[in-house]
Length: 146
Image (cartoon, rainbow, N blue to C red):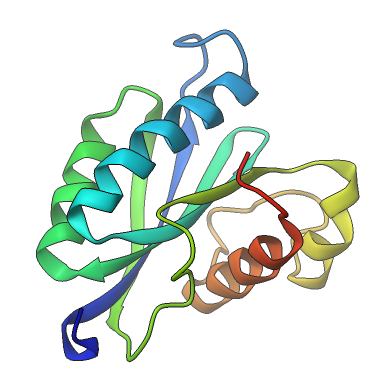
C-alpha cells in the first residue's frame, strides 16, 4: 500500500454493557470481527478497553477508515463515539496487527500511568498523540492479541 494513501484515525467510545456476557467477551468479539474485516480492507490498528471506555487507533486508506468508522458507529456495543482526529502518515505504527487489542489489567497500570491515565481514561482529556503512544506501548507489551 503506498504510504501517500495512508491515514491514522483515533476515536473513543463508551462500552454499552448488556449486549454480551462480559467485557472480555465483548473485546474478543470485536477483535475477531475486526481482524476479518480489516484484513480485507487493508486496515491495521490497536483497540484498548478500560472499564467502560474504548480507545482505538486505526490505520489505512481513507475510504477504508471511513467505512470502518461507519460500522463502529452502527455497532451497538459502542455509544458516544467521538473521532479525535485523522492525519496522513508515512508508515503504519501497527503494521503487524490487523487488529491488536488489550483489556486493561493491573499489570498494565504502569503503562497507563506513564501516559497520564493512572485513574482510567478521561475521554474529555484524551489526546490523539497520547492514545497513539499508549496503544504503541501496549502493543509492544502484548505477546499476542486478546
